[in-house]
Amino acid sequence: MHFPPLATAVTLDLPDWLNDELADVPDEIPAVADRVALVNRLADRNWREGGGGPFAALVAERATGRIVSVGVNVVLASNISLGHAEVTAIGTAQARLGTWDLGGAGLPEHELVVNWRPCVQCYGAAMWSGITSLVLAGHGSECEDLTTFDEGPMIDTWVEAFEQRGISVTLDVAKPEAVRVFEAYRDAVAAGGAVVYNARQA
Amino acid sequence: MHFPPLATAVTLDLPDWLNDELADVPDEIPAVADRVALVNRLADRNWREGGGGPFAALVAERATGRIVSVGVNVVLASNISLGHAEVTAIGTAQARLGTWDLGGAGLPEHELVVNWRPCVQCYGAAMWSGITSLVLAGHGSECEDLTTFDEGPMIDTWVEAFEQRGISVTLDVAKPEAVRVFEAYRDAVAAGGAVVYNARQA
Image (cartoon, rainbow over all chains, first blue to last red; front, side, top):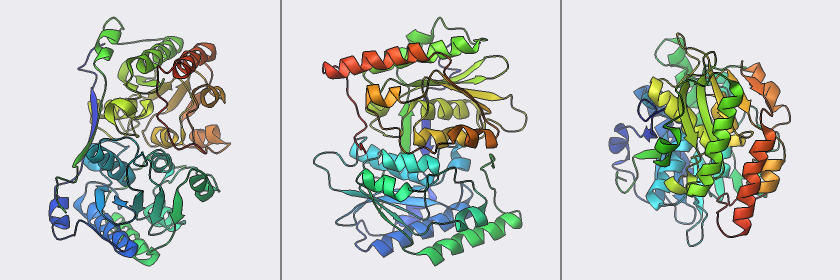
């Protein structure tokens, strides 16, 4: 066996439209509600641009709101199923800081902000990233009901399991706005204007 | 906000030593036991090379044993916590085939082979990848006991949840050999010759 034809790397690129979308966004967003509003806005634009599902995330310094990274779902654009919003936000934060541990010695505490509860893959990805807080615009069955994406089998005590590992969880900061993104996406899927890429339904 | 300093991409590169290690390995490995033996061998070399933990994986065409991709844990080499063996194997398989769905129309069935049960992140990653079978050298508490890596909170019915999504699971194909890799790693960690990078213990 040889490289190539074996592939030597996995690359997840963020879309170019983020340059325009973020141009007027300040480097620090002090209020948690404003950080959540940004991920809802990016989630809505992301599915409209066609690069992936209606999901976005960011990593911020918890105390100051300084934005370390921004991520969106890039499954369709990258052709890589791993490319969820939490993965691109965590990965680009770690790439920028040069560490696999966002909770490492000498670093400020880091927060992951997402527009909905992570799927089971991103549940683990968040757990191993070194963040010390997770902030969600919404959680509950609305995401699966409206988008038909499979979240996977999460344990019932998923919040407690985060907290046992030193990760605080803040729920439902802007749930109605998050649900509206999924409703618009659902309507577009029904009209043939968007793709549900997650094919392994239970 | 602008790119840079925001990072625009997440990249997980496989290590150069795989070129030598795979040079004499045939493109097709028809017997499942031989595919499992290869991931055990790569897992052992991986921690010794220092790029990540004692974990390796591959994606094969299920019927023929043709190897589509090989992956190892690259967390330390990449400085990205997401870089588990399943992630690099799935991602490079999808990169090679140009699709986010290894179970898509017109493709042969694909199998993921790993040297131990996936952690909760890679449980989800495998579920969304499009594989139709998962083959594990071993599973059980030995991995966490010997390596001290946290697997995360998996549901008790993790095998059934795979099977509900059309993914068959084969357990314990070469458990003693897989355990020996972890024992060697544990001894090296105790002697100061290897790093346990997973910092968020319960």
